[in-house]
Length: 328
Image (cartoon, rainbow, N blue to C red; front, side):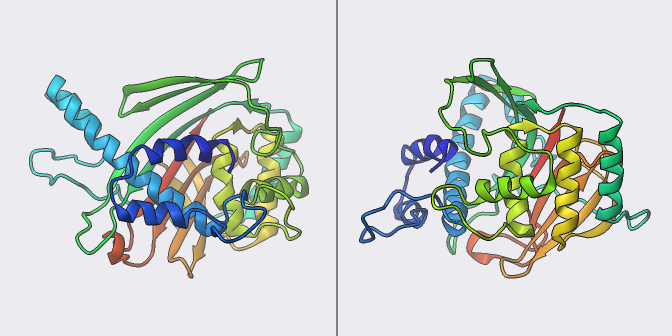
């Protein structure tokens, strides 16, 4: 596993509550107990999704415990925690569905080829440089599982990552404007993506994101497809703030990959105007919507929503599974 998985998996094991959690944890192991001798391997796509489900469930429990503690300290804190998911606290149930999906306007849709041309032109004129660290706001569904599962809860989080010259970093986390934590991590020995400096050509960036999606040895020989690129993108953008050249390379890579259709203009959750591009994953019943700056190709946000009811998780079609908004 890469460092994020190791750190969060340790946190998960401290909060395992039932056999269903243990089953999810076992499912997150991409190699069975009888497979050998090389049992330490990177997570595959199925295992990564299973681990994420387990993380969401444990985060939901920790969030509920935080709510109780804050409510005991001051009633206003309870309202702050659920400001995004429970606009009418007095009338809302104990859980609430995710905020609604964004709806692009069909006017002035720009093809990815055209947007990539604009981004490359903007990069030649200068623009911001690549910077280590990131500032991201996320909304993630915490889902229960089973016939009696409650409707999902949305967990909002704002995280700012700052890197130091010695390779250490600080991560500050807030939720609804309330400070939650600030942690310092020592320098990492890893030089693999996404820790490695991202390239600024489309071909090299595809190889980089392919390794982000499928880390480890031996490296896969086939490049990542469109959905895999979108799945890997948050790992990159949660670690680095792309410069003009890197944003142009990303736009060109996505244009060359195909599978993303222009959906028009959209105002994201931070009030910014962007161009929306949609990819449908019919096998998994998911819709990805990537929002790019129309002039520079900068990635502003990524929304993933369910396109079909998932009764096992009390999920309904149109529920937003995750949303990330990146800021400079």
